Length: 354
Ligand code: NAD
Image (cartoon, rainbow, N blue to C red; front, side, top):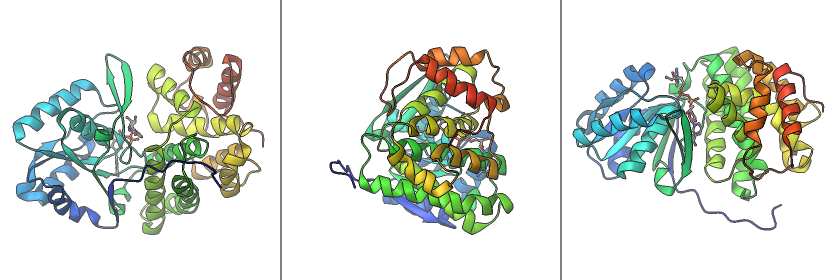
């Protein structure tokens, strides 16, 4: 039980279920808009065009140029289309990249957002916007970045390729893991995090066996919602710092990087706060939270070594240097040697000691 906490409330409207995409027009109108620009990445253009057709007169067209890590140049092109189209809202259909573009447009224009996530990355419930310009990523938090309405349609996740499903789910679990020891956690989010662990634990194996399994997909998407909600209200620590270090410096794939690091960052911090990470050990077994997540990653076929994403052993020195450059709160104190050691294990793909 928490003795002290602040619960700021969860202000977003969430529609969750199968077939909910059909409610998009109603949700745009509920926010008071009669023209919305539909956003997606290039691979989901077809789905975005179908959604625009479904929106009919409410659609101000499609911009299908969303890209990973929200490059400012892409946002500027999208902003020009947004202004020219006469839209006052955006509808983002896709993964974290598309949600990022919706947020970037909202931050610049005050547009309302209806976002429809199709991966488990979990940007949709947060007030966080990461943008890249000239190879530099900057991140900010602000209430006007948080999407007003989020539509989760399980049907849209049925075709998410298994590899992406697995990495994206581990990405979501990383949010829950760091939320469990965040100083700004509250009891509502703690319950959501615990529920998310169970939802992924129960849902993912069924999805791996049969990617079209509606019940497994529903559980996984529910877990994604819960993890995203937690991420949207608490601060992150060492795990996210390391994941961003690799993404920013070596351009490693976002979700895979999270998936690989998660068992190791969990094991590292578990030494300091075993009681806070106990829900992970209880859900995944393995004798400890770190080992349990490592075992689970193996069971669902997630990547488990930094070598799998092209990191060479000498890169670890550079990564360790960058990761300790700025100070940030973390439940366990560390120095460069400790981080270098953590990275060595993540590179070798060893099972964290229980
Ligand atoms: P993504 O949005 O780039 O999607 C990856 C690929 O999957 C794309 O090619 C996309 O077209 C495809 N895809 C998406 N959904 C699909 C589906 N259902 N079926 C088939 N293909 C599908 O990647 P992502 O992992 O979802 O998001 C990563 C981005 O999100 C990163 O830029 C990360 O920084 C950001 N992010 C931000 C926050 C935040 O709070 N600001 C949180 C989490 C992630």
